[in-house]
Length: 90
Image (tube, rainbow, N blue to C red):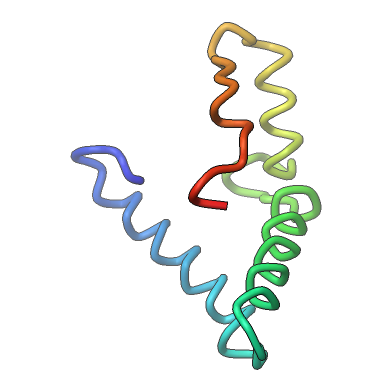
């Protein structure tokens, strides 16, 4: 989801979608949807925990950036147990 009146974020989302598509369906053949789902989960884990983003996060991985923000400003985060439960989108 993108913020209202921020059209540049749509471009960022589209670029990430293209990156994911290039790394999955354009490069590999999947025999069934579960193979694609597993590959997507592995790709997202590698991105969030292993890829260091120089410009946007000053050399941190997305996970490290969230942990750093959590320790410096814990009040900005709200815990919602429903977000941690598997549901229709999983």
